[in-house]
Length: 341
Image (cartoon, rainbow, N blue to C red):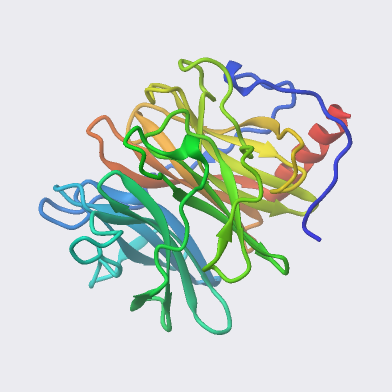
């Protein structure tokens, strides 16, 4: 079982920006951002970010990322790397485009979550039609040419609080965990505030249910607090620890960070334990906002990587990465667990 049980712990309030159980600072890569926006007129002129990674072997990294053009249409492309730091974009991007007229994803496709199993390459993504956001799936034989499912859209949140003021559902998916019991998708609203993290479950990627209307990570504090909104979260199992990395911000996105929580399980009602911040906005390429963390264990170099999107003062989204050594990360998590008992 992937669900781990922990003894009672202290309650932390992340809206203060302080934590009595600190996780060591992550090191930002000195050459961030690692993927830049395209040239004027390109399909990814405004955004090249919000990406997930497939590590085929130690020298084959693929990043599936979201690109936005000048008309603000969102599409999905792929980039390649030998080390996960130096990337080159595929020459025939985008590889997943918007749907046909009046379709559920006519105005954009973004936030691709990609993985490969023995049968095929799989993708979960968010589609847009006007102010309506829903979840779709696609498959590929080679990771480049993708075919959208005829069952799309496969999910939108049944929770009334996730609907926009126009009454249309809003479900943006980011963060996937799967094991023998099925698939667990972390999702949130988009313009409906406060944004909060919820969980949907499926056995086949087509039929989804929300086991609970209670958020996995709920809003805290007033609308000016960092932690009022939580969105674009990524679940990660590290040894005996089940963790969630999530973007947090105030209502107007004036304060923004990537936070880290420890949880008993994705469907547990126990309050998540806040551990600290991984990344905060800084002057430069991620001055306005940070979000969409994607976490991967770089076993070759014995470190954890947290990829994330950053928004610049010019509202351009690019991708960056932060590191922490596996041994230091484990030591800090274990020390924090002992302190919380």
